[in-house]
Length: 526
Image 1 (cartoon, rainbow, N blue to C red):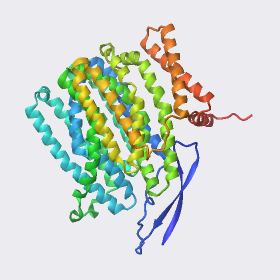
Image 2: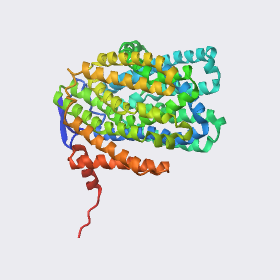
Image 3: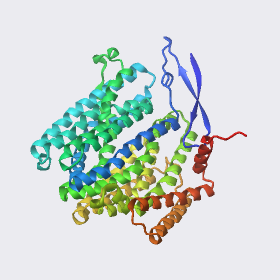
Image 4: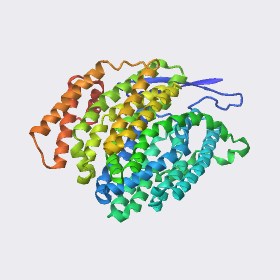
């Protein structure tokens, strides 16, 4: 027998419309549910995006608030050595994770309401991750014994390496799979707030580098300890039999995703590693400053892709192709409208922003930021297109694109870093990201039904150009000495010009925001 249950699902970023989706819950002869999404409440995309965005912003605000303070105390050398070691550990973490985070989200979501199978999958994946992490620490030991740059500050390297273990027990993929974004967000907010407080209280001079690294790890993955203990709320280990464990079955699908992750990481982390070996810590520090600024903007926009994957995959599985295409198109429109002006704005205010963000000693990073600023748009677009393809099981196209981009990045880094240091690394990354996004768009055009040369793109370019002219005029004819006042003035000018143009043009997203603001303002009754 079966029952039909109607759920109202808000489809973001639609125009506040409600879509009714019917789920069929089929029962076996024993009365056990064999369908999906009955006992676990499925959150709306709006709800998930709101919490995931808050979590992302919290993660981005931590360096935004603390980096200006820390950079003035630790100097480019101190920041550079931490970033260098962190890049090495990131590679080890990547290998020990395989493709587990992305794969496990999909698998947990599949068995969200089949408690027994969900617990089994979770335990198997966690055990696999633990085994791989042990191998990762063997690699850490080898580096400590035989690599001179690592032995220069062994306690610092070992401290940063603790993030490998924290990543394993964090099981963040489980909470994403069951769409418990609220818990993830609250946990992160508390941990990062405490980390920021400890940083200002305990880090006062260059000798506090180890303390800074400990707080850095705490802010990044320290909250994962709470994830592990809270897992008992969902997982009943007494129901899991060791004889039924099938850990090996997860290796093949995770390896496929791992290929994508390792190729992508080449031009994400390799820049800092190559800079560290080919130049000095100061160059790594400058590059770290520039990439932190771009990642703040990228992270805000790409929060959308995290919550889109399970929903888009569901639409494909259920044959709701119209809903799939509609949400995909709206998402690409959103990325274009937001990320292009952000990228141009970052390019125009890079100098005062770098001075305020990192201090006078980081002034060389301003040009690096300008060179790399276009990736705010390029990476955000690639993220949404990637979700488009991955939800349709076309990840092999993404692998091809990232392999091409990584190869170009490696070659360009080898040529440009010795000549131009951090600026060479920035240019290499820009070219690599452009190649990746272009290839994804070309190879995936059969599956991504979107015309990029449309009204939305043309209008965004026009409005962004007008915004840029306004910022340049203010900067040229109203010279302001105070860095803070200058930055606030330029950013406010850009936002105001762009927002007014959208409102005059009756942009869909601008109207949604205006309606929300109007709805939140109480009306006086006479």
